[in-house]
Image 1 (cartoon, helix red, strand yellow):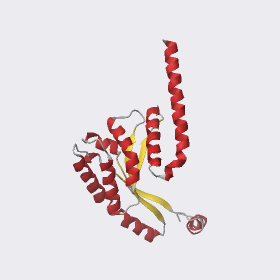
Image 2 (cartoon, helix red, strand yellow; image 1 turned 135 degrees about the horizontal axis):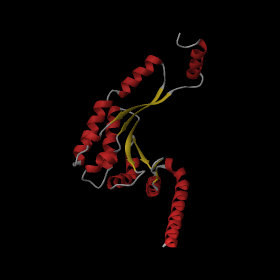
Image 3 (cartoon, one colour; image 1 turned 120 degrees about the horizontal axis):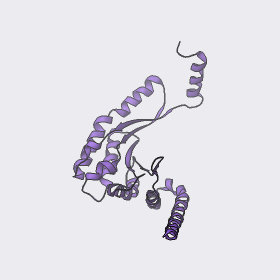
Image 4 (tube, one colour; image 1 turned 180 degrees about the vertical axis):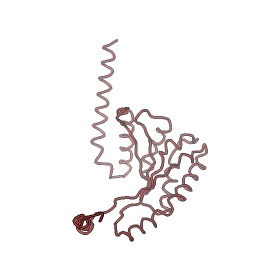
Length: 210
């Protein structure tokens, strides 16, 4: 017997009395091979690859839900960071990539798609900068796209310039009507003041050593 009666009963209680569920099932997709200098071609490849690989996600999750009686709240796809995939693209606006992700998510019927993202814990490339600039419009116009920025790591520390850029992007998004972000503004303003003071202090220390 793999499980004791106590364990089985405890599991039953979690489902029936404590509303245990699976918060999300995510399919990760590497879309680095979708990179193309032509943004139209790149976004077409991204759309097709997401639809081909994750097209059955919703139906499979529904089957698991029915078969095992485990509520599954969300279905999600996560793709490679768009700032990396789009780096070779000849465009000044990354909203095309966000829209491609959104179309794919709506076509296959999932709840969310993540990957409109950049890894900026070390530095900010031109591609990263273009993606950050596109975040406010992405979150205003796309229904299912999630965006994220990796600002720090245990080895590289915190990229304070990236923190400032992220704060600015979130402020613009909130001003555009995304009320979900408004509670974060106080913290972002505090970050900006801290960064400003930190820079002033660094400049003073540099002058003192000269």
